[in-house]
Structure formats: C-alpha cells, structure tokens
Image (cartoon, rainbow, N blue to C red; front, side, top):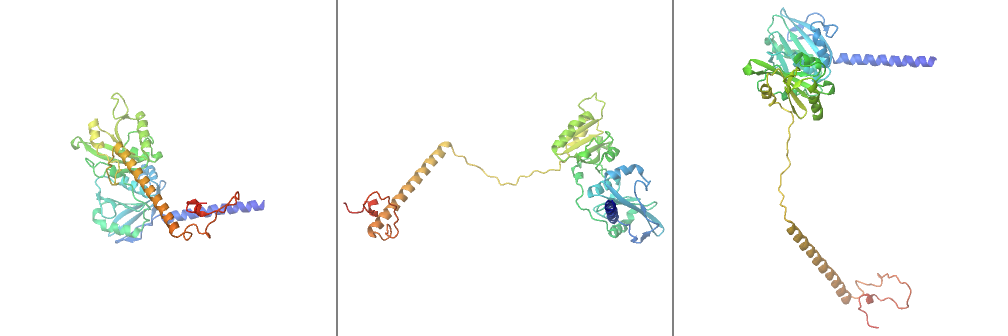
Length: 383
C-alpha cells in the first residue's frame, strides 16, 4: 500500500515537472519587448495579450485562434512626449503568422522597408518577423516618419525565426483589376465568413486541409467590386468532390435562374478552385477566373528523337542475311580448327595432341586390343 502511494506521488511529481518545463519553454518562445530602441523607452509594465485579458477587439479572438495564436504582450513606449503601443503576437507556425499579418493589414497601408512583409499607415504599422506579428499604433502621430525606428525595434526584439517558408497562395490571384492591399490568407471558416459571407460553417473544407486566399476586384469600369476566393486542396480528387458538394449550398455558375441560393461562379485548375461572389453575370466572373493561376508548371526536358521504322520485308531480309553470315562464320571456324589440328598431328605426332602422359581414356575392358589414339583420326597403319 505504501509502495503504491509512493509510486503515485512520483508519477504526480513527474507530471508537474513536465508541465512546468512546457510552460517554461512556451515562455521562452515569447519575444520579450525590449527595454528601449532608437530612443523609445518602456512606459509602464507590459500587459499580456489574450482572449481573457485584452478587450480591444474581442470579436477577432476566434480568428486569432484559427491562425494558431500562442501568446503575446502589449507594451507602451514613450519618446519626447510621444507615446506608441507595441503589440507582439506570437504564432505557432509561419503560415499562421503570415495569415494574421495579412488579415490585420488594411487597404491603403503602404509597403515598408522594415522586413520583407511590413506595412505602414499614418497611425498604424504591421510587421511580420519570423513567427511574430508586430502591431504598432500611435494616436496623433505620423508613423511614416519612424520607419527607421521600427527597424531598430525588430533588431532589438530578436524574435525566433520562421522554421519554414511563408505561404505563396497569393501568387494564384490574377493581377488584372486587382484592388491592391485586399489579399487575405485564410485558414479557417470564421476568418473566411468575415471577408466573404457566402455560407455558414466550414463549407470550404478547412478541416480537410484546405487553405484559401481572398481578394477584391474592380468590375464595371471600377464602379463595383467582386470577391474572388481561391481555395487550394491537397489533391484534385478532393477539389472535385467539393465542387459537387457545393451544388447543395450555392447556385453554382447560376445554372438555375429561379434558384434562391447565392450565385457563385467557379472554375477548377488541378487542386485549385476559384470562386467569384458578387458578380452580376457570368461575363464579369469569367473575366477574372480566366486569369486564375493554378500554381503548377508542367515541363518536358527529355531530348527528342525520331524513329525510322523499316518495312517488314526489309526486316525479314536483314534477318536472313544475318543468319547466313553467322552460318558461314561457323563453318569456316570449324574447318580451320579441325584442319590445324590434323596438320599439327601429322607434323608433330604425339608432341602437342594425344600425348601419352596427357591421355586418359576410360576402358570398359570388353576386348584385349589396346587403345590407339590414332584410330580416332584413322591415321594409324592398317591392320
């Protein structure tokens, strides 16, 4: 009984130590706000950013979770009487970090030379650094003037690098009539519904490994915009099945004019499906879907050659001639071998061939006549 109690205590202690190590590892992965950068110094204590501690945008937390939100902090900085807020969002993987960065970015934000993925506006800046998304806000400030300061922030932050490439699904979007800054990388149904509210639930199949990109396009001479949803699936078979399932949700390609379901125009290229929502007719949708990039390239690098196929008569004639040449060669070789052997036996009898020391002939003992090797070639004297 005491032994069982001791074992239980050891197991419980091991679980607590494992939990403590996991919490310590998670805490170590959270980028700590630097004490200062480019003359900006911390103002007040850092705050934890999470569903239960940050009430700035509670409606966005389900979207944060779809992108794989892990942890984050919010820190105030002051410089020369000016104040900015720096929020650090730590994501679980590069895809989620890139997705959150694209989702939080708003049209009109100009590309900044801080990192490869960074955008800045008058009072707001977004920076993607590894798996960390940095959001900087400032009231009454022109953040466009502080690009060099924010680069120093990235250097001082020393965020963990991304352990893989960022998604490139944005390259599938057509360039023609695209509204700059409206592309969003989507990994869940909540984020998709907030940008393209065409149906409820996980109709796009994110649970089956789908990923999506959403963009806005100008039509009708720029007077209206439509939404393009590009969804990529693991295999062409999954993409084909999804198109069939959508017939129960949408009026796909407006095939039924009396259908009360939303009209969605579609196209499929290998594993990629493009959907246009908001188009008034098929021509508007096709003008965009026609330029959808499948993301696949087919190349053929093998050298080419031509085959000269002879007729059957020529083939048969070649076989007969080749067989005749082979037979002639066999006959000549046999005669040469036999002739050389006979000549050598005549000139040097018993010296090269049929030497007594090398002869070993089996005898049955049926007769008394001794064996003479010359008898095999009829070279001996007649009896």
